[in-house]
Amino acid sequence: MRYRELGKTGLRVSEIGLGAEWLERHNTEEVKAVIGHCEAAGINILDCWMSEPKVRSNIGAAIKGRRDHWIIQGHLGSTWQDGQYVRTRDLPKVKEAFQDLLTRLQTDYVDLGMIHFVDEKAEFHRIIDGEFMEYVRELKKNGVIRHIGLSTHNPDVAKLAALQGEIEMILFSINPAFDMLPASEDMNEYFKDTYAKEVGGIAPERAELYRICEREGVGITVMKGYAGGRLFSAEASPFGVALTPVQCIHYALTRPAVASIMVGYDTTEHVDAAVAYETASEEEKDYASVLAGAPSHAYYGQCTYCGHCAPCPTGIDIAMVNKLYDLAAMQEEVPPAIRAHYECLSANAKDCIGCRGCEERCPFGVKVAERMEKAVKLFE
Image 1 (cartoon, rainbow, N blue to C red):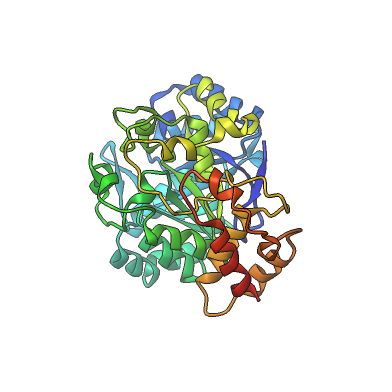
Image 2: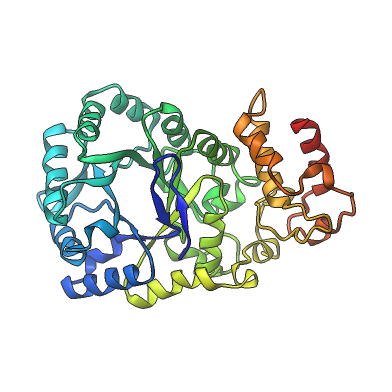
C-alpha cells in the first residue's frame, strides 16, 4: 500500500480508503471481517458519515484495540431521527449525534471532523458565519477533532471551502463522468442519462477546484469514485464503455490534491478488487485509452495527466510539467512553491526537443510541444 500526505494536515493516508456506507447492510461479524481485511491490506483511513446506530457500533467493535491504526473521517450534521437519517444544522441534534458517533466508535476523538454534505453556497456561508462553525472550532480547540473537513458534491462549494482558511481537507465526488459536469446544487443532475453529452470536456469549475486545492494545501479524499457502479457497465456508463475498479481508482488518484479514494466494500473480495490497484500494471490502470475509444466522450485536447505521453527521449515527466503549468497559469505570478517544484525536476519543458512522439501516443490529442513552449515562457 502506498501512502500520501493529506494536504497540510500532516496525516499520511493510504491511497485506497474505506468508505463504510455499504457496511450498514451487514452484521457485526461481517463488518469485522471487511475492516480486518482492509487493515491487513494497509488501508488506514475510513469515512463514517452514516448515522444508523448499528453500523456505528459494528465499526467500533471492529476497530476496538486498533484505534491508533485508523484515521477516521467522522461527520457533523448527520443524525438519526425517528429511525432514519436526517441531515441537520440544528445544533442540539448535531451535538447529540456526534457524541453518539464517538461513543459507538469507542473513541474520544476523530482525526477529521467533517462538516457534513454542504451542496449550496448559501448554506455554506450560513454554516461558516454561524453557531455551527463555532461548535466545530470548539471541538478542534479541545482536541475532539484534530482537523476540519467538509463534504460536498458541488465544486463551487468546494472552492469556497478550499479558500476559507480553516477547512483543511474536502471529501468530494470524483470520477471521469462527474468531471464532465458543471457545478450544480441539484444532486439529481449528476444522474441524468444524457449528462455526459451535454458538456464539452472536463468542467472548468472542477479542473479549477483541483488546482486550487493543490495550491492551498487542502487535501481531497474521494467519494463516488465508481459513480455508484454505473461506470462498470457499458450500458449504464455515459461513455458507452465499461471501466474497471482499477481504472476508476487511477483516474481519481491522478487528480491534483487527491490523497485517497474512499471505496465502499460489501465483501473482502471487494477490498481485494480495489487493493489490486497497488500491484496493477500501467496497462491495467489505463483509463485514457478506453475513454478515447469510447462512443461518447469529450476529453479531446485536454491533458488528464494520464502519462501516456511517456517515455520522453530527454527524460521529461510530461504529465508533471503539464500539471505544474496548469497550477501556475492560474496565478498572476508563479507561486514560489510551484516554481521550486518545477525547477527541481531532473528535466523540464526547456529540455523538449519538439520530436512530438508524445503527441502520437496521447489518447486525447493534446498538443504537448506547444504546452512545453508555453511552460518555458511561463516559468522563465
